[in-house]
Image (cartoon, rainbow, N blue to C red):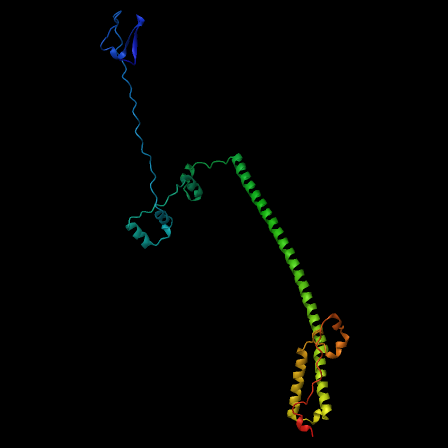
Length: 291
């Protein structure tokens, strides 16, 4: 079955028509004999475009990049060895120099012919100059404002540090005053302790030893040197024992003779060890003096 394009006879109208593919077989209209048009267009075949290869960037080696960055600082021997190994350093970039500007900078050293041939220096645009000056002024004002704000913040920090330091100084002075008061209190209590305890213990020891000598009918001056040394040792041991002895119910160092001034602890249900009596017996080394 034919299909596709067709032709209609211009004389007969829509009643006479033919498919374009059958024109070579039936070149004329069967009703009027008019030739069918022979310029049958060939079907256009669309071809797929060939993909174009994308340009790829050359792969860069990080080691090569690092070497190129420090190429100018490497020793000459290292550069020669790297070149022999196949490494190529990028050539130094040459900046384009404005020849006219360079000549205008050295116009005083040039011949008059070249000076006359140089173009005249362009006059600056007032508006452009004003704009550039305004930009510079704006940048300077902004920088000054930032520095002023930084100064204010730093001054606040300095004031805070001063206040903290002043408070710590006052605290240190208070502590120093408290230390001085504590020293005075310690000296006072030490003196009271020596007056009430140490001296009293020494007096009691001396009284006890003297009572023993009186009971024996002897005097300390009549003792021999060895007996005196033993007597002094006895006094020292007795004084030490009295200082170390603490009577429960009495403050430390309170002698038994002052126990009557303390409240009666027996009424409160507490027991108290009776104070020690006088040391009995003979003093060591005195037996030879008795007759």
